[in-house]
Image (cartoon, rainbow, N blue to C red; front, side, top):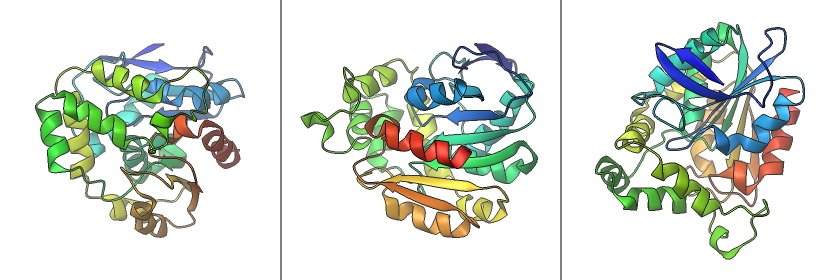
Length: 263
């Protein structure tokens, strides 16, 4: 469905269910260059098991109007505007990569609107290499290749895909190819520039789950350690065979962890 958020059209996947303010809600926030479909299995499950699901396309991504938001703080505030547009008071927020930083910041800035947060593929700081940023700024194919290769564990090109009929490299490249010039760069720069992680983590008063991939080359598990320690009462789950794209590489493990965490 489409929602009007801050005067722009935004697409959200709702698992083909109408939004019902009486139900608990889950917002799924993707990472840089991706869209709502990266949470296909997980969002569909909760939509068919008693939750409102808003698996969104961030501005400039997927089917949502641009321009892209330039900072994690802007995305965090925008998530609340999305809830307002959907006429929902509170929600749990599940974020991946850039979306995980936004979920963290949203919970710190708007505690009255967030029930709990699940942070997938998170690290702090989430620095991006100069070469990667420059390639993205210049809209070079190399940026899409780096994003795709580094986002998956090395086993992916050799087979073993847990989803029959799905080509993870091709799926990622297809999403990236649809982006307008500058969108990937803006989102990567937002990750790179975000500096409030530990401060925001210390403010949290909601339950938090961190999901990390043991073979993650973009946000290695050690990058989440200090953040996890800064979040009071947080729980960390490591997925042994997954890289950064854990929703596709280890879909069942991610879903099981979210089912347990979200209740």
